[in-house]
Length: 326
Image 1 (cartoon, rainbow, N blue to C red):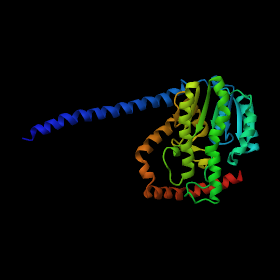
Image 2 (image 1 turned 90 degrees about the vertical axis):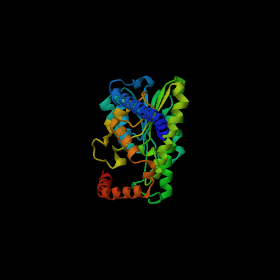
Image 3 (image 1 turned 90 degrees about the horizontal axis):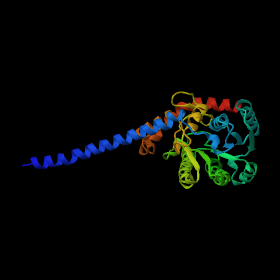
């Protein structure tokens, strides 16, 4: 007497199960194809960046990812405006680019932690340049990272510095460069966010919060101005060996800055949001699925992070001494 209901249930749930499997198969296959297009085929099929203008502007251009962007953009045919805090490093980087890449350079000294007063002189320095690409790269975090929100000396200054450098710089620099891009109906704004901007990250609270601002700003700006020929790309790297990551050892997971930027620039015009390289895209996929947000926000997750910090303290201290010496 219960045979009919069982048959009825099976006839209903079997197609639902099949459709669900088909949905996830198509979704995964589509993501895989997109990944191949973005990170593999882009090596051979990439955008000519000189189309957008004669000059590229890079903030935080004397170290790490910013310096790598400056060199790679020059290698691809653009003149470079370098903006950073250290005049000595600016001159050295400009000389490197001119000698190695044979392109013109212009330097602008600015401390992005100083607030809104710096942008008037920057705007004056960029006036009348045919700027095709802006790379908003400059960034800052706590000197000792990861740590609790109140776990740094002079926390109020640290908050202001990080907000000014990471968050304020992006819309302010964009507001300077965007009007002349709109006149020409072409341009690229590349905003460097982070994997930390994909979820709330305890022990990285201020850094992650400013990076998610960059991500949301980029996506909205792209929606507003892409129909007018302006591409806004948000780059969300994981570990790249730079001062910010204490010159982490390079391996499959940790990219060298030059290699990372070369791959990331290949994706311009192909995707509006990128992890930059196939290694980081794969890491993001597995981290997002194996370490969901509830785990990152749990006390267990925070304790686990503490253990990692304790193991890395000798390495970080060694790097700090080396960095101060240099």
